[in-house]
Image 1 (cartoon, rainbow, N blue to C red):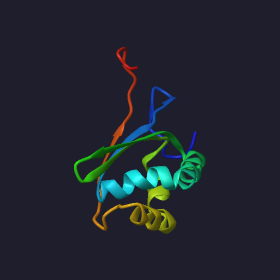
Image 2: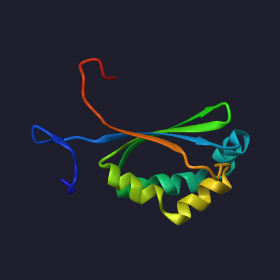
Image 3: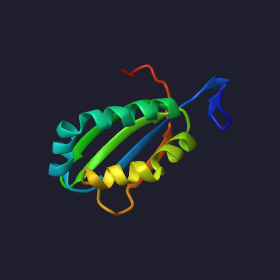
Image 4: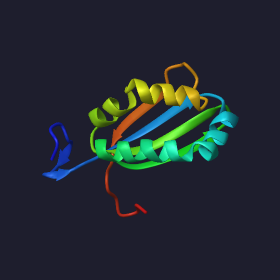
Length: 112
């Protein structure tokens, strides 16, 4: 188990990351199609760094990212990479700081 991994009763816990990023959603939607192979390479890299699940959503003037990571530190190392930041800007991400929420993922009887 990586150092700093949250545990409950000795069972490894993960973290959920919700990130709302302002930007050009038309540009982002087009990039999902035109630059799909780059998104795949980034996802592959994220998995090697501790990402477990990943999903995008698009709202009115923003992109929502919902991820699950082994640790918040793993996500931080991934997301602050200058190359990733350049990519985000090139696919429509605004130059503003995104809203990021981190919480411990928990299991429940109604999870699906």
